[in-house]
Length: 171
Ligand code: FES
Image (cartoon, rainbow, N blue to C red):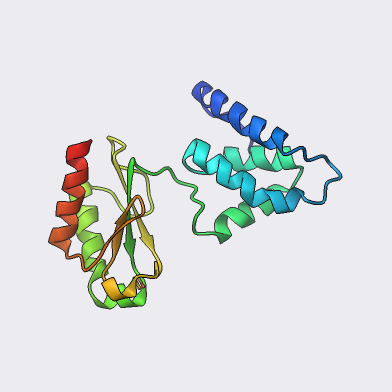
């Protein structure tokens, strides 16, 4: 069973989420509860930065839905993440077009330089995380990487490191 409280510091975040959900005026008999789920999860992720199990459980309780309904939506949509992201999240496209143009080497180099694996926890300083994505719809620019949604095309391993170093300078 979940629903253990997160840290004390998370209380304000839960309060903000509760205020948002309460503002939707959904009651137990409201058949729109499931329809509101994605909207609520978007808000929850914007508040917490990710959707750990405690947050999913909280949302399920508030919307009077089974936990499985919430976790099913979270795992279905790529947009939702259950692991924290760094200040700068580096997405590397591993779709076919990017893969054949060397995105695996880009990803490996970024993992080596940053000392973390894709789709795991961020760097110790919280600055960077890496995600490996499927096609992001910019195949003409393959291989593609993104930093917080900003697209960089035709990246090489060396260029990827240069890009990351620029963000590192900004801190
Ligand atoms: S495969 Fe990378 S953008 Fe399409």
